[in-house]
Image 1 (tube, rainbow, N blue to C red):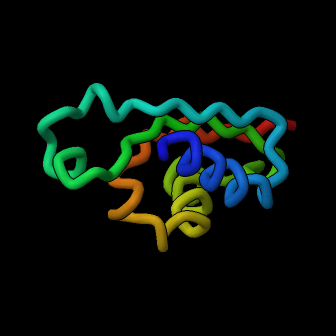
Image 2 (tube, helix red, strand yellow):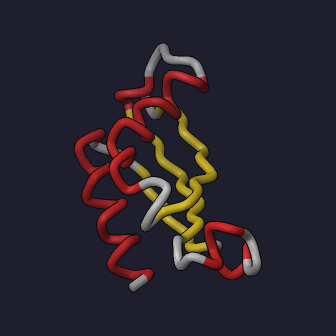
Length: 87
């Protein structure tokens, strides 16, 4: 199930044409947390793309969340995002 969610995240974020995209499942670090108890996943996303050029951190994160908002809060409860412009 986690691999399916990772693949879905990768698919959704691929429209940003990332030069680097790392998705790490950190659900095990959140055992007992409300979202984890209900079966939702926690992921760390590292995404670098020229699409972020000239944008601040909040705008970069919004671009990521815009592509996955329908997946939250279930099946994905939380994302930790490292979003950088890659020029």
